[in-house]
Length: 519
Image 1: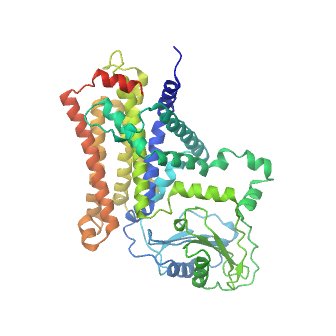
Image 2: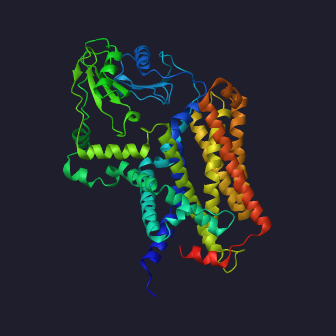
Image 3: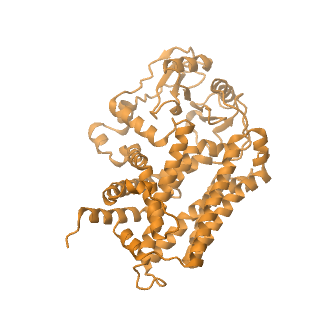
């Protein structure tokens, strides 16, 4: 019998969602966490206390850089904002001398004093992992992520065609119904945030479009450098003159740039050839100040403060790309919209995870011997356990390692990251050696226990535990600890549901089975 369009799309939806579903789950989970990457980093650096003052921080950063590297070829200053309290500074030694990581960077307070903080990549690692992955070349990781994003886009579009009750499914979430409940969870999380899922997948592809489709650049520009110059307006520095000249005060320049941008804040400052007559200061608008990710720039002569041509590129294509990237990263979002981003991303994570579980739940009823499934079924089931329970366990261990590893440990940030993957690997091995039903329960309990341990370990190792944070009004730390407790409760409840179903031996009615199979 000839298949209908909906049946064809159902098959496409199933396999496009399954083949790279585990990678998509990891991308969604870590990308969702990255909407609070600044807050995660602040929690992972409890030594940092204070509020942001961008102007004072910029002046303090210049004083610090003048002391540690006055003859550098360039300085780079990342200013604090409402979500961060520290200034990040980087410098390039004169002559391009190679340096170890950490030797040419520092974390400063608003007065320009270096802060001794534990080495960590904080929330930034979770952000980078969702498109750079880890332990593999970035180039290949981004291609793999791009393929997964294309699969995701195909799964979303085919899913829209497949589900004929897409609007009715918006209101359907039935608990305790076995396969029907998994299908409801998959449908509801897909439909509620459908515009977000489409936007986040498409804009994710746009952010790396020039890498995935470089032929237009190759056909129209002599070199990649020529493309960068023409499109982004990145001029090479004039070079040092050899005449020493002190850098002007940055405060008037910051105020002038902000006024020219209708009050939008300065986010980054770069200085080429500091303390030289040819010094050039470029101020870049903070990505948190507008939806476009590529901020406006203002350039000034470093010795006099005279405005220069910033050579800021303009055009509809660049503006469109800037907005696409801004929509994807959500840095412009204030608290209400940021939480909407987070909850939508969480819904996407549940959508992918429930789809992976649904694949096994639906096919188990059609196995000749459900007690002895074939290799492909066992592989999917074990990968589901390793990913859906293992990755969250790894993230919780990442937070625990931040508190438990010695502050002076060599390459401490890398060891934190290693702890995440070791925990994830451990859950994967456990999923292989244990019966699937027991492995699900045990892995979910482990994930819940690890998240529940985070506030406890935080209270035992720092002075910013939950009780102290409530008393001191430290709401960032209060919110983080409460989120850990909430996640722990969710994993414990999921494990409890599995135990209850095993005890009662709930089976799916035949009618529900036929209905789920056709979707």
